[in-house]
Every structure is written in structure tokens, then in C-alpha cells.
Length: 103
Image (tube, rainbow, N blue to C red):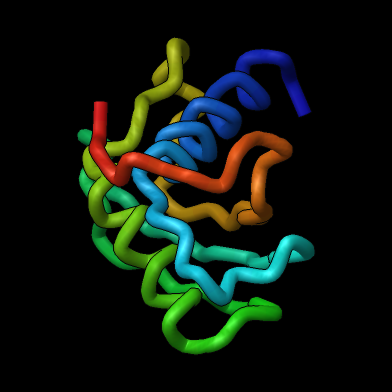
């Protein structure tokens, strides 16, 4: 993966994490794979948690975080834009409290 593509995906993941409100029952070993489709301006077209070790409440919280993150950051190089992609959602190694506010 190129440095620019990695920066693009990292920016998307960071935005989603900032907008996530962690449910009380979220396991510390949370591990989910999320599929996202976006429009060219970064607006979310659809999102699906395709695999997750959490319950329905947790899955909904992740989907809501993605929705609140719309529009997603765009890459510095437009050629790197991905209309659909998957990313891994895990609990960051930081305090679990999240504001749920977008930037």
C-alpha cells in the first residue's frame, strides 16, 4: 500500500473512531470489518458491518459513527479515491470515552 493511500485510509478510520460512541458492552477485543460505498464528494452511499465479534447494538453504533463521519475525508491525490472499500474497526489504544461529535 502506498504512503498516500495509507494516509487516506488512516484519515477515514480516524474520523470514524472520533464519531463513535462506545456502547457499554463493547468488548476490549472488538474486531469488525466494515464495507463502505461513497460518492465522489465523500458522502456515504451505504455501509455494512460484514463481520464483527459484537452484538447488534455494537454493530449499529459503528454504522452510526460512519454515517456521522459523512462526508469522509478525500485523498490528497484524486486518483486514489475509492468508491468502495473495507476497513477494520477495532478499539483504539486510548481511553474508551468518545464525544460522538464530528469535526
